[in-house]
Image (cartoon, rainbow, N blue to C red; front, top):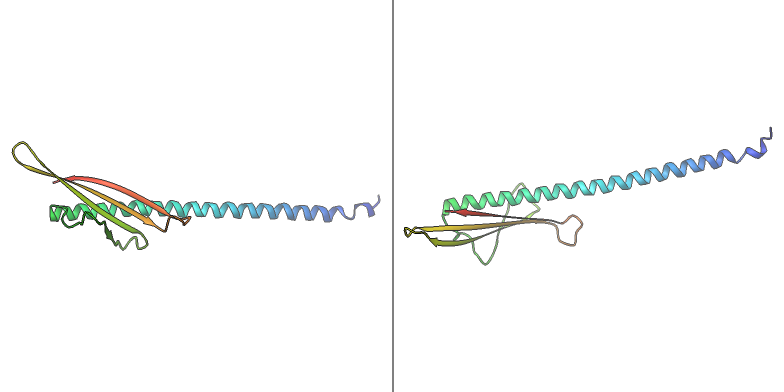
Length: 137
């Protein structure tokens, strides 16, 4: 058997294996980064939705105590600071409509609108959530 003809085959096979393993590692790292980014985006979106719900709960409680939307300036949204969501900009607005019922009873319908955003629209991690609630007092 002639050993001189087979000398470079082992080296080529080793280099090929190193290249294939390296490509696999690069592919796995890219997939891991994408998965991490998607998880972060999902977490931020859930936090935005929860912060909007917290703002609505705060607004409902304020309406129950004040019995009207006068605590809110209708031309400006109230910016809330919620300790659990320090990096979110949470805005709450209230619109009140009064209706007179049949026995001259005034019915007040308040519409609360809450929005929350994190980051700026130019960021990859930007999230925004909005929710609305209608309350009758």
